Image (cartoon, rainbow, N blue to C red):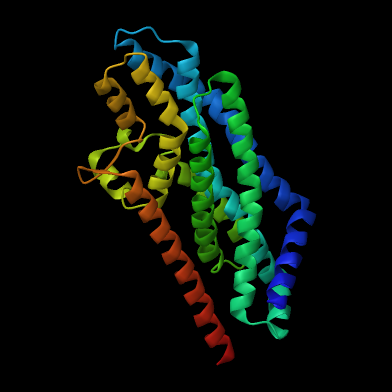
Length: 301
């Protein structure tokens, strides 16, 4: 345990000392927030306004803003929990490039302890950045349209924690195979550009073709995004019902923005989404452990 604590302390210090790595991780949510609010905000507002106006009930700006920023915040957090994990986990690859990883393995430190040290450090660093991003989103939502309860906030924090566990495990597995600075940049670019589409953050999965929807329904990140959407917008949908909007309209909106997800035609309940995401985290961590065990055996032989 003393060796693990020393590794976590060492990795954490290096993460915050490396200004490039730290600010890249920290600035990612801020950049996404600006991009989302600038390019997607108006699109979401027009979509919600048209959908609610068709119900024949007066729509307040506060309700519209609550809808827009509930979707924007959930999209931003869904992406950040994974992309920031890849930024925070760069130290694992940098140690390989610089030869520090080889020096650490020469010392009396087990490969499993070394791997766990990287994982926990990445987890803590990513959680810090993502919870700061969550606080910023909640603060802004409180100014434009607040419909959240304490229970909603706690659920959002839990969703972020689970998605960070998922993102950290995924980045640990992929980074295990990387060994150069160029590979880090390439993977980071691919993940940043592609993950938002795969998890339904940039564009709701309901807007994709039926075939692609079926494929994406197998990806755990999809359900993480939906969990955040449900908890960020639960109060908004409740307010719609209070103001007299037909339940059919509310359900249609939920379907359109992936609050309701369907697996081959069957609606996936929130409890099932948690189960899928939790199992995915356990499986990915197990794969990461197995990779390090096999690598350790290969080195020893």
